[in-house]
Each structure stands twice: as structure tokens, then as C-alpha cells.
Length: 276
Image (cartoon, rainbow, N blue to C red; front, side, top):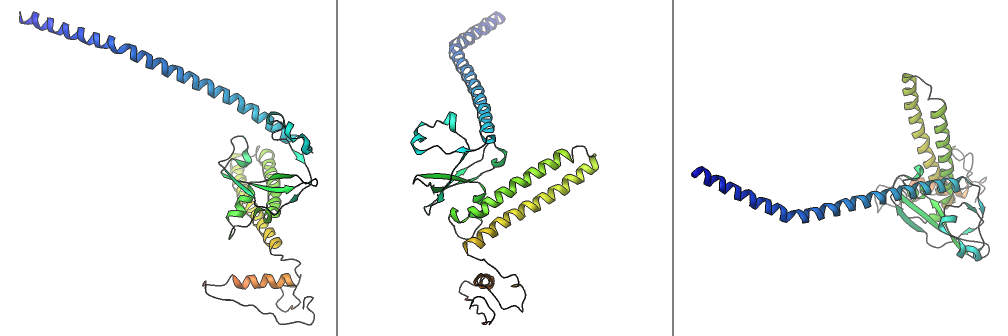
């Protein structure tokens, strides 16, 4: 009797559990369907983004490789469309204005290897001969000169050095790519490793030299440190130009150790000096 009663009790518990499972099963099924639909939608969205990304890369490569065309007249600007004219290279003549520039931060581009890291785009206002104003994208390299410079100089004072550094940077990348693809590809494992290490050290040195050269161009241009005398480094030469005197005055000011310290520079007059 006891055995039969325990058996009957166990059967009633199983019946209650089955009824509870039947009660919860519709809600679980709906949740499963919703999750499956969400994952399917997410997958379709990713496929669509992949197609759009490849189309954007193809359009970017095609338009950047094409020769520049003249900038359309201002009367045609309203007809420009992103799908047809975006990334189009144009050529025009303009004059940089003295108005504030725009700095736009970007985390980098996934489709352009030259700007894959974070940085800031510099947009400079320029006036066309007809009077219209356009914004010129001066590129990423201006960000380094703007941030690493004492103070916050306007971008229009940095474009000369930035342009020079950009051109030399592209030449350095092209030469480095050519050497890696044509000179190191067929090398043995040992010589190839030494070649890569030495080439990398040389590339880093030249890259740093290019950035410093661009910074020096900006300093010379903004502070008007030209023309300089060829004999100025000679201690016995006293024929200094105004640019030489400004440069040597700046050299002495860099030796200040305290904020309240004052450094004054005087030059002995010379009869053969071109700048009295």
C-alpha cells in the first residue's frame, strides 16, 4: 500500500510539472522567434553594409585616381549630388582668408590606409576669384603641428609646412613600398629580416626628419626668419641680417630657467652689416 501511494504521488508531481511546462512554452517560443528574427535582420543589415562599403571603396578609388577637373561654377553647386560628385578631385585658384578655421575630430577611416588612426581634419576657408568662399580640407598632418606647437596657432600659418610634409610623406611611403615589394620579397629569411629591420629604422628616421622639416618651415615663415646670412654661424662674422638677429634673440630666450627671468640681447654695430 505504501509503495502504491508513493507511486501515485510521484505521478501527480509529474503531471503538475508537465502542465507548468505547457503553460510556459508559448512565451518561450515567442521569445525564440523574436530573437531569430532579430539575428536574421542583423545579418541582412550587415550584408547590406558590406555591399555599400565595397561600393564606396570602389567609387573612392576610381575618383581619387582620376585627373582633377575644374571646379564647377557656383551656379551649378545646387545640382551636385553625393552619389555622383563625392570624393571628386577638382582644381581651382583661391586665396586663404583670415577667418577662423574648423577642426573636425575623426576616429579614422576603415577604407583609407593613410588616415586609419584618430586625428583631426583641418578645414580652411578660401575665397575664389569670383568672390565665393569654399572650405579646403588641409588634411591630417596639420593636427600634429597644431597640437605639438606652443600655443594654438591658426591653421593658415601651418599649411606651408604641412603641405611640404604631406608631399614628402607620400614619396617616402611610395619608395618604401617599392623597396619592400621588389627588393625584399625574394630575399632569404636571414637577409630579409635584417633588411626589414634596417629599412624600418631608416623609414622612422626619415619620417621624423620630414615632420621636423615641416615644423621648421612653419617657424621660418611665420617669424620671418629669412633671408639668413651664409656666414652667420661664423663667430667672427658681424654682418647679420634682421632675420639673423631675430633668430639669435630667440636662441637666447630659450635659455630662460624662470618665468620671471628676463633675457635681453644686444648686437654690436658693424660697419659692414647690411642691416644697420
